Image (cartoon, rainbow, N blue to C red; front, side, top):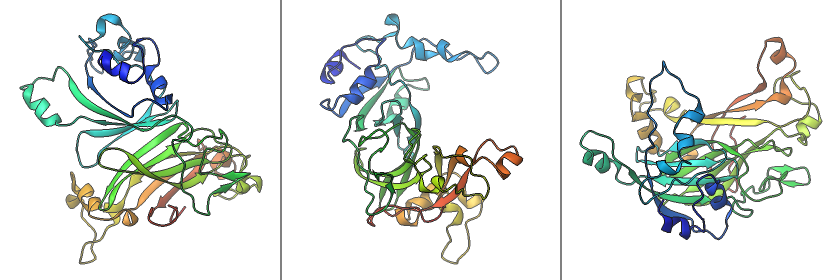
Length: 330
């Protein structure tokens, strides 16, 4: 970013500081800014010459002589997990800012023209428009739950253990593009004693979050199921503890039926065909598979068969037009 952009965001350029963390936590900072992606001097040398992360471009971002003329690298966040790209193929993506708990969107604009102008080479830089879709501040995100998802001494509309209305340790992230809108499915991995949260964020064309619904909660040492010693797989209960949702995968196109009642063939599902099928159906008609890791359910058959941990594979749908999004099956 330029020095002027850093000033706009209320930051001093300090290359070895976690500037992104500070920006994400500043409630008064603007939510939009412009920037560029620049390369460093790092060059990949092939699979047969592996290098440690500390020897890649990551550590070069902090070096003074690596800064592009008139720009400085925007360094931080302490930990990020799982970007998700626009299913339409547009050069846009969201990134979970895991450590401080927030969400950022990145739009590379007319990437095709930038690549074409480079005449077969890589562009010197790529322009990007950035939006802080969910800031890492208390009050930034309260989930709609209707009369469901009650937990011990409260409900899961906020992160009960931390006592904050925000994203906490967002991990898994999936972008669903449907006939009636775009949605992000988020999995938190925060060690929440009141149950880990999985939720749906409605987003608009400008990468803003416009609505938020809780989809499910799992585990937690205060879970009434765990307090009763109950597990999904009989005899697998170990002791009350946390759980972790681990991603969402769309299976809509695999089970959709054509007008004649037949399923799509493998040939018909190649390339972008699956997204074309998904994009023609509203959100309420989308189907997903998810996974939850439940180490609290690791006895019995899990232990006997040498499983890493107990858990479930489940299929679900969601409908944000109802009073609360919810699992159709688990």
